[in-house]
Image 1 (cartoon, rainbow, N blue to C red):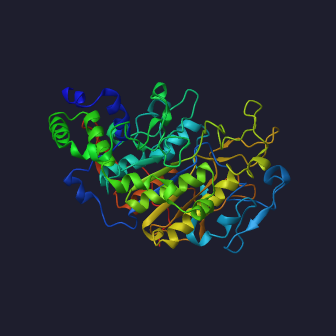
Image 2 (tube, rainbow, N blue to C red):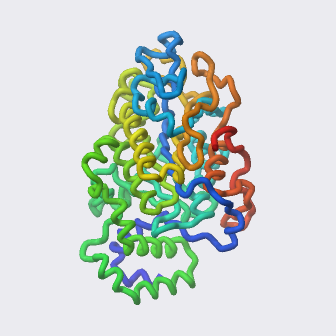
Image 3 (cartoon, helix red, strand yellow):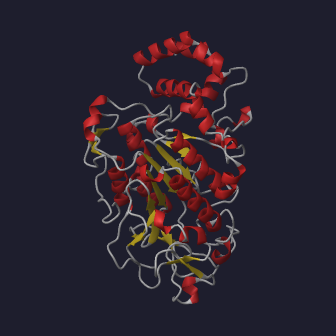
Length: 456
């Protein structure tokens, strides 16, 4: 493409990485399919790997020790409802959220369950990379806002496997509906990666970092460049051209760049969230939504430093502590408790929670019985999620499991129902017909119901 020569190729790669998954404003024709919403923004707290429900949100103090473990439980603000002892802040914040204890589906496979959770669509192994994420659908239907792509992942580097699978995708909608990934572990507070040139293809290369020698003033001043880019895009509908346009738009908007800079927060606020990866990622999600981002997913699983964060089988090759010990670590449940409670409280205090839907998801729970290595294995039959804000009726628990937290004793709700509930809050009709790249008609969501009693 001739317009690439307007900048050095390496500069375009650096800037272009910002838009590698950017989204575009939807066609005007889609306006009729979007109804009045209870939420303006969505934060999905995505804990890939399988969070242990019995050690967190569905404690069973009367169960035998081989089920409940050796840790204690804590009373929540809801009479008769107890959490694991490592969740004191969330236990005190139940007025802000609705806990779903009857999350259930029929798969114990990580990849199948994660794609099901991310898309609301039940898949086969052949469909792992074909179905669009919920965030991609939202981006397609609602478009970008305030200079932000319609779907942002923080940091978006989780790669389950082996081999590693990049499951944050636009699927049959096209790569322009992949999420924009902030990248990084993060090693830098402003979520810029600053990786070496040799590492440009690494997962953590994304960041709002201008190439050396190219500042915002020079970028804005290149009107002829923008005009030529726009002309090329008008004549060439390929995804790469669309990504570059959004990349330049992001770089020239101060509100976007500033939203990614955590150094602008006070030390007290950052301490409240916890000086951990999960804490600072949740804080970044709040900053992005506050600045106008529509859909932000906090990605916390399969960490390059900590390993498979939630997949706590405690097999010898994992080198994990026992489940009753690992949950106390600041990067495990104890740190998540602090970060999530701080996020909900912060959104509430800023008057943002009513219009921001917050959803905590994981692909499944873990076995009620602790295994002989001291861990818990995959358990699709039962798990716990929560919803907050965005029209959700807080201070309640939907569903219940049996005395060992093994199976729901009330109506089960699965990933498709979670997706239907998110679409309901953001004003998308699940029966809306979309078209893939071959112009084949497909529904927004082929199955799923809004979870009964979830919304006020």
